[in-house]
Image 1 (tube, helix red, strand yellow):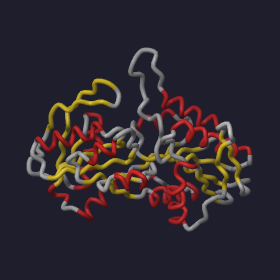
Image 2 (tube, one colour; image 1 turned 90 degrees about the horizontal axis):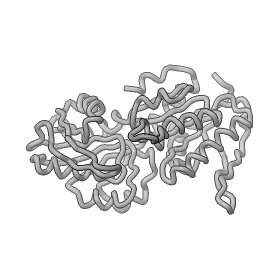
Image 3 (tube, helix red, strand yellow; image 1 turned 90 degrees about the vertical axis):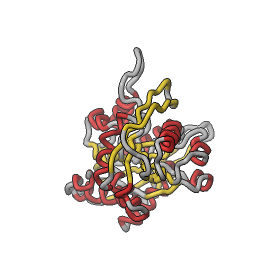
Length: 314
């Protein structure tokens, strides 16, 4: 075990980092993360980190590029300050949807981001619900990949009789995630067959599985413009679902997503605080936030103590 543990936060996850340190019973590290008048990122750590095991909490959410550069500069500054090990804690990994070539001469940006984070000096990455699990292989450093499913499942069990649930995957790619969630809830499984004409737009075709007179739960790893989610909810409504809920780990909620959710048949959207959404929660009473702070706090503690983190993966 290293000499000491320090946790710092960039601007994107300050509230979450404070919740993590409260859970762990330690103070949040003091750092100045701002910008010069021309927009260049300015970082200065106010505490000694020499020989320390340091964790930097920063989601690369909107504004994606500013938050990414903040993270890289913080990692570089810590390495230059002789931190023993620097772990990038990225509750939400931006650019994860660009994990393969979808057209000729297109980039694989998720791999590029992994290379940049490693080049900046990160020794390890801790993240939650990557859009594609194989992104772990884009890194040449250890990656601890956690799942928010158990947190969501426990929240739903408190409020509902989950034996009447049917967990619904909004597309074929999310079936494995939905099956694991349904098993945890003791629920049945259905799939929405959709075809996407262009990025951020989808057309729902039909529902595969029985949702008539059942409570349907749409499950996805993230909600961006909410187009897929809302069209899926309408398809479930037409198929006879008695109640419609939704779950997502990463509430990107860009554009007019909040308005779409407000006007949709979705009764409640369960989501986590991997991305800050306080302003959007005020606009939409259907949004319900569950914190991943205890999950990340426990993972950070285990990584620091050099004990197994695998119990948190299931």
